Image (cartoon, rainbow, N blue to C red; front, side, top):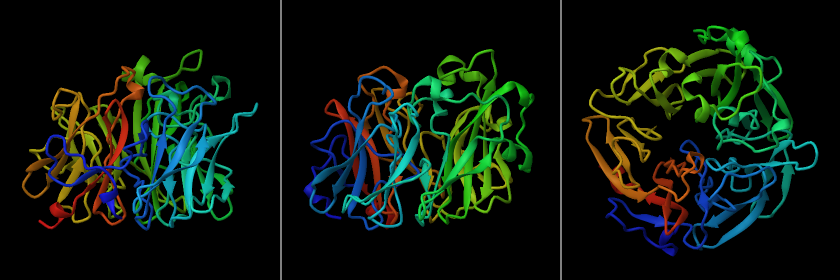
Length: 423
């Protein structure tokens, strides 16, 4: 890539070169900290452009899928989508080549059925998938997702917005909802693991006191880098006489969580991090590069958030270091010597003025550098519309893409980490 076509970001004296790759287009975000928006060849960047930044979307509101040529600096709207929310956009994922880009959309007729497109952004050819996408496997063969319409039962921002009457109500552990897998070679989708099957087969078990009296839904779903194992997020809360919505706002302390891991063949099911740990306070788990361990933030000692790791089978949960505070969206570099993360504006390591650091943390000695400082506090007070940097490595583990709020709008940036990786 030739980032010289883009303006440099120089505020607060970054410790690495940084470029704004959406200088003309406002309202843009990349997907998440576990998924690179840079194409497999490194030539293109895919981002989502929100049609507005001052409110949450209503069913049928459309935003843009944009592909930016990182060699020429030119950008192109390659599609529009009604299948998005403010934190993850339309869940844009690259496949194994630059000719496969996946994102969600919604049939806005009476059915209001969400689905994913497989788009070749270079030719415009597209193919409709039966199911939706949250995460694509690195080899491009599979898409995984929970029910994208029920995500806002606990937390809006991550799924697909449809009218309330088209959102199911899960009463207890159901057999006909959970996590869905799509074969990208055929477009066919099937229920990969129901909520009931995950709970009945997990070893160790997921601890739920009264399974018959909860609403329980799938949320995050992530392939490991080797494309042979998944980590699946379950969320539940006490059931009432009527279906509930947005529990993070109306009853956050009632929500419980679990990470369940499972082989791509459906075997070897484990509760990696259960509610007895989550209740201490934690967030943002993802795979280590080795595909065998999980990293996350967890208040493991009930004193302050820490960076922790755990094996996929739930064994050996421990702090990465005793002297490092956790924050934001952490990822471990493949040499296992460094963690890259951001921070929320309300966390202890923020600057308390709407700006936050990207933190480069040494696991060898606990030292850290604030390599970039950037504004992330939006104008809208709605927490669903917050701006998370979501720093995401590209496939070469050299470049990092992240979000910011500069010039009164959402923008996307790329940092070149080469100088830090040489040390």
